[in-house]
Image (cartoon, rainbow, N blue to C red; front, side, top):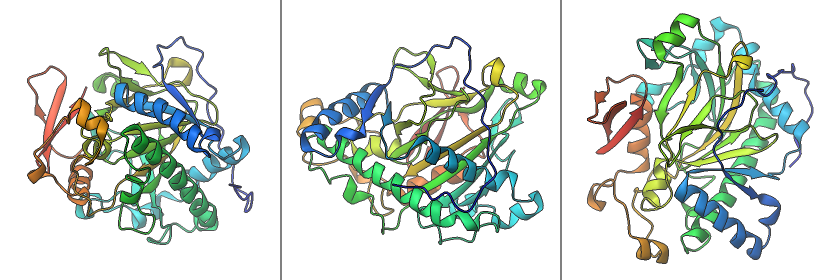
Length: 363
């Protein structure tokens, strides 16, 4: 893929990588340069399978965009935040509670984080069909490039889904067929900007910017950026940082993939916290592709998997009570950061029930 260099866009200057000595998670690397052959996909499927079964995250390299092309996409990602006047943004606010959708702006201080502190995160979310909603005037010149970029992300998604199907010894298109480009689903690009908080709010919130959570959809594709803040809850029970890898992707499974894989692929708990000291005065700009299966898919374990026949299915609900993607997605979207959570018997864990599924949040 080639990202068009026109029209010009103001350059976003990210923070330099941290120099602090952090404890990083050890993640597998999937090299998409090997994905063009059946032999290469078989090799990559083993890496992806083990990563999502044991940890829930992995890196992707050689994804098809050069470093300058990726940098231009980050420049474009900043446009909704730095170029659109604040007074114009409410026109494009997402109907998060009303429609259970993030399409449009999520303003700052919308989610409750911890200790009475609201978030300082602004997001702008664009459906994979970029013409589905109207966008701010300042962003419109870049929509053709965003459309190409979104399609490229979906192509990467399809490759990931094929690898995960191979890992379960299913037909390669088993999961691809549940994520149609032209189907009714909520696959979208999120541009996401974190702003520094006051020292008082950091103390009240315990340095947490987003509570530990699992993603709602099937696969999340995060374009790596240099501000360290993302952590995962590793299998040993410790929070570990995700290392920035230049021009790489960070991939994780969400709840829908965990359900569809009978618990084999783990929706790993992750959180965002205050960056290291040498990055704390910088904004953190992110680009994420959130993939979700088609709205009418019932979240049942894949049938016909020899792997699941051997290891068994880990159920979060009985098959007869399985929600559809639409009901589960809308419920999670509308409730996140807005509902009063109940304290679990386990220290530091709060819970809510969405479409019959117990959803946990971690402080």
